[in-house]
Image (cartoon, rainbow, N blue to C red; front, side, top):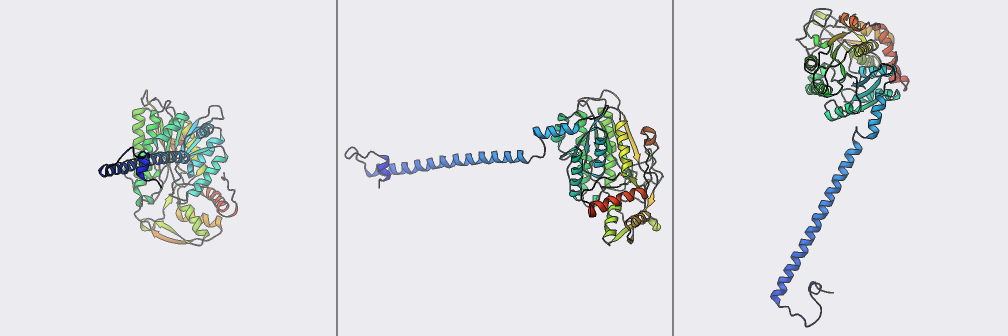
Length: 429
């Protein structure tokens, strides 16, 4: 077998005579050269691997991205198409939420363009939101999965579609959950709102904005019924505080940038496809399962009362607000004139106590509830709500038509169908 010397030097005999010192030098040189070549090879191999890994990661991010691309843009444009004379094109945030899904369907039904946006968070079971999305999809409504705080996503949506209106319903809901996760309220209800307003102010043309405030902003106010001119500087919960902050923030953007903005103070919305964290929903579940329900009472054993408002009435109020919203006056972030700024109560004007609500549920479920009365804890809840809706009535003809008895009957029929007897549940109207 040829030695390394034989590999490196000529093999003809008598031509060279290698002394021992040179032999050691050449061995050293040969060893060093070999190591150098191996090092170069390893460096090249490592560089190739890193480049390939970067390519794979980039490809993976591209393939798993929830938005973007030619097909995605086509879906957005198709969903935003208007199918009636004088129609509007609306971006609905929180589109797979309770109110958002109903509003989206109503807009589509009358021929407006609708594109939804939702982050499908797990505040309550996301499977209900997925089911709502399937329902929207069956009506040709495309829902983009993404977060309000994703400025690039929002900018892309407005780049693809020149929305005439935004129906902003996305928010972290619930009064009591704020005690567990206060940061989520700031993230969604304040930071997310500001991010959306920033995109809207820069859009050309600017859209008109209708957004969901809350009756909770009335806080510790004791004057009834609650009117838009009443004090709202005594919030009883962090949720209420973030909604009040939203009203101040939207006023600022209206004043500086000419955005037409309408805030809607919803009063205890209920109905089919509702939120599982709401009392009427959890009461229904527990009654059917034979579990006790907790009913809170105020001071001196006074029953809590709520201005329960059926979802169809809320939807009519939302559409009326969109249709009468007026136009934003800015372009590219610069105000060119005064734009409308409005706040309306959307309620039923007929408060009902919680025990009467339970009576009605028992009637329609045909099951007696196991009632456990507890004094209301200091968790941000208020003892009563009662809406004065004269402003909304005068501005766009808002008039609730569904009493609690009728509304709960429709809800129970949907609940039994969705959770028990019919997998092909549909909205009940």
